[in-house]
Image: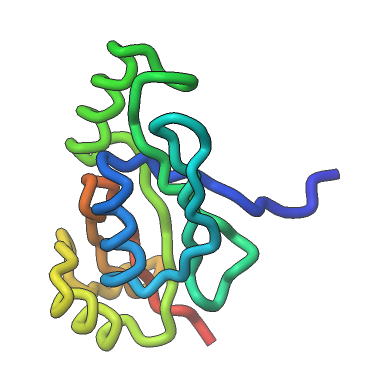
Length: 137
């Protein structure tokens, strides 16, 4: 039986830029930042209160996972915001929204009460989009 997930990947256009975004804007902690052979880097971050879930910021480059055409297609999908998404939660959506917006995070939807909860939508520096919701007590 599977008991939990401990790593998940987010494909990014540039790992240095993603490092800056996730660490300096979102406030995530770096778990691992290590060279993995020529031109490869294993970079994982996590929300400060969830260190057991490592988010691997995966560069989209030709090599082990992608041939040249697939890498180009993946870059285009990520840039257009059509590849994937994630859901993050916080304790105070308005305060977190204001803090992240002041740091330059691009929101496509301001905090809004929906039938399923209270959320805002934002993009990372590569084009991946995320829902940010207020944690229910």
